[in-house]
Picture: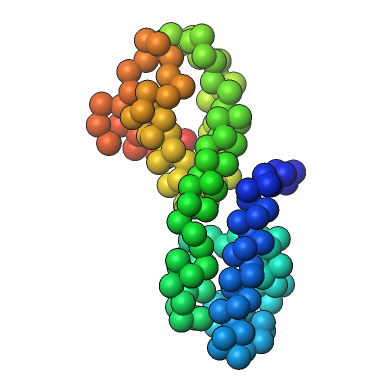
Amino acid sequence: MTRKKSPQEIEINRQFGQNLKQARKQLNINQTVAARRIGVELVTYQSYEQGRRFPSNETLEAICNALNVRLSELVDPSWRDLHAISLAKSLIALTELEKAATKPAEVNDDSFERLRSAWVRLNDNGKGIALSLIESLLENNLLLNDSEPAFSNGDSHSSVAQSA
């Protein structure tokens, strides 16, 4: 099931697509050549230009190299924050950890299974973003149970991530 894009995401994708098309046209190449240089299928490239999809970080890097543009020419830095916020909201909705839980034993086991299930579906980039978002929530004491301390150091999450 595909998640519905927010109006901000739709605008981000549209603007990115326009910037991508402009960069390609400045090189006087067609979509097929651009897709080949970037290392993606033509239909994937076309979906970027048409604003239907947004590339991964790895593909963004390949686009910048292939079209000889800076990332800032394609993507406003604030756009990445909007994507991160959207991912955080999705992650929170998926986990649905019980707010009332005061001890790990009181947390519904189904919540952890749903979190694990969501985790294994993420690619490496998604896992990195999810961990960063969770750490940010904890560091800023957001959405914490009253009795639960935040991670005491940056290494605490690694065993959770590895076991998931």
